[in-house]
Length: 505
Image 1 (cartoon, rainbow, N blue to C red):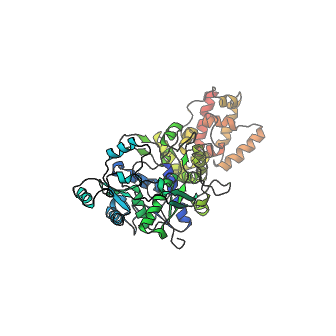
Image 2: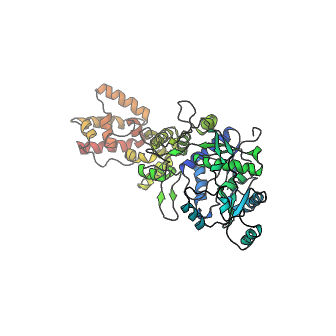
Image 3: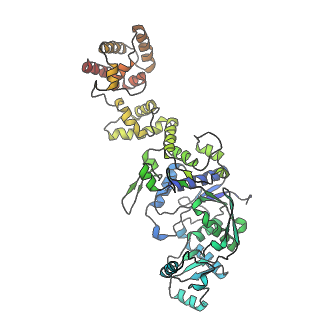
C-alpha cells in the first residue's frame, strides 16, 4: 500500500442536488489527494435507475467547478479507467457477478418483494442470512436445472453475497481505528438485480475501486455499517493486497437539537444546504444555494473544512493551499460536527474583506442595474472598496447602505435623529462657507480636500463633517467624507450641499 500512488474518489448519485455534507466529503478527498501528490477520481453512481433525476449530474459538476474542487479523471474529464458512469459498466460488473457465482461465493435468489415483506411481517428482525437462506427460494435450495429454467424463462432474480457467519471482520479506519464486527450480524446483501441488469452499490463500488486503483476510501459515517461487507468482498475476489484504507467522516449535525443536518433545518433557520440553487424538475420547487445567496466559494470551502477537522491551531482563515498543507485525516473528529451556519456568515464577511474589489463589483453592478442605475464598473469597484468594511455578510447588503453614491437624497427630514442632531441654527451658513471653500479648490481629490477643510475647520473652530454628511447623504451613513465627495465630484457635491441648505434653511 505504501508504494502505491494515492488515489481517492468521489462518487455521487444523480438523484437530486448535492447536499453540503457531500461537498465536505469531496473536499476532504481533494485535500488528501493534493497533500499526497495523488489523484482524485470523479465517478457517477447511477445504478439505481428509478431514482435518477434529470439535470442532477450537470448540477453536481457545476457545483465543484464553482467551489474550485478539481478532479483529475472521471466523468467529463476522461482517463484510463473509463467509463466512469456505473450505468455504462454493465458488462464489467456482470463478469464479476458470474465469478462469484461460479466460485460459490454468491447465489441466485427468486424471492419476490411480496414474499420478503410477508416474511418480515411474520418474523421480528428477519434477516436474509445463513440462518434463513435455507428456507427461501434460491439456488441453494433448488436444483440447478430449475434455477436455469427460471432464468431462461425471464423470471426476475437477484444475486446475493453468501456471508459466512461467526467471523470477526476488522475494518482498518484512519479516523476510528480498528472497527470489529462479527459477520453473523450481516445479511446476505443483494449484489445484482436482473430487472435492470445492474449491480447494487456494494458490488459496483468494490469492483470500481479495485479496477481504478483506489488506495483510500474517504466517505461519510453513514457508510460505516457497510464497510465489513466490503472487506469480505475484497477477500472473496482475492484482492486483499490492494484493499483501500477507509476513513469514515463524522456526520454534519443540526444547528440545534439532535440528528443529521437536513434541508428542513435550512428552510427552518434560513440557510442553504446545497452549493447551488436547485430547481426540482418534478415539483418545480426552488431550493436556495450558497452561490446564489451571495457566498464566496473560498468562504464555503474554509467553513466546511473546519466542520469535523481542525489544524490544531487557533487559525481559522485558511486558503485552499493552507488546507492542503495542513490537512490530516487522523485529526478528524469521530463525533458529529454541529453545523454552525452563523459561523458560515462570519467566514463570508471575512472573505469579502480579503477579496479584490474588481471581483466583487459585478454583483453590486447587477443590483444597480436592477434599480435602473448604470455606472462604469470602475466606479462600482470604488464604492465596494469604500463600503465593504461595513458590517455586511453579503455584497447584496451594500445597496441600501450605498444608494446615495448614485442617487441624491430626495428629502432632508428633521425627523431623522442624525439630521436633527447635526443641523442647528447657523449650520446653513457654515455649509455655505464650506461650499465656497470647496468650489475654490484647484483639485477635488481626497488629499486636496482633506488638507483644505481640516485647516479651515481648525481655524474657524468648527466641526463641519456631520452636517456635510447630511448634505451629501441625507442621514448618518456612508464612508469617509473626503472619499465620498471625491467620488461624487465637485459639481454633484456642491449641488447637494445647496439643496440641503435650501430645504433645511
